[in-house]
Image (cartoon, rainbow, N blue to C red; front, side, top):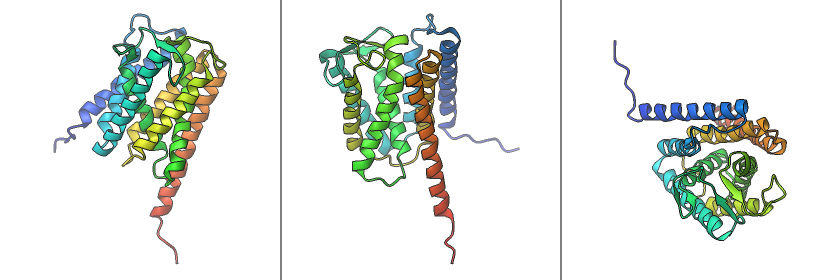
Length: 254
């Protein structure tokens, strides 16, 4: 029998995916069943976000990686300006949960920004939208994701704390305006993805599902509803893209 030949990247990718799946299932399960984070694993949140970014990096082409690195850098600079000067998002500070940190901002936020930007780029890929439409839509998608993540991250998960209470689960509305502005700049700069990356789509959707599940388990119905709406939008876009691809493959009938 001929030996099965594996691509050089297949085994590391499988290991990354398996580790990410274990972290995802363990994280959701612990919060849903116990209603609190695993206190004996303070590193889990950082590792989960790091694995998400590594999966995107490992499966992206060189052209896309340049844009994603730029996006991660822009997002991280915005985080630093936010925590040190209260600029863009409003005054807040990171706790000790996400480590290590540089200039008071967790380095793993580079990974978080990269994974979410890659996801939103992929969702609008092949829709042939002009940049002046695609960039705001992608920024809106990013902001909608923040509506799901922030209520948990700033409260139950304890990733960061706001200096002033706001109208949305204690989050200032200025934060979401800042997210939209930063995301819009990023999507104008990095533009569309060069090629399809289903891994980036799966990772992005899994992050939305992760926080949606936990939000619903805590009874955060507005945040959970936003997450379910995003999941529905994901499948609507994927279905539309699939039908467009099928129509292009159909031979023209006389």
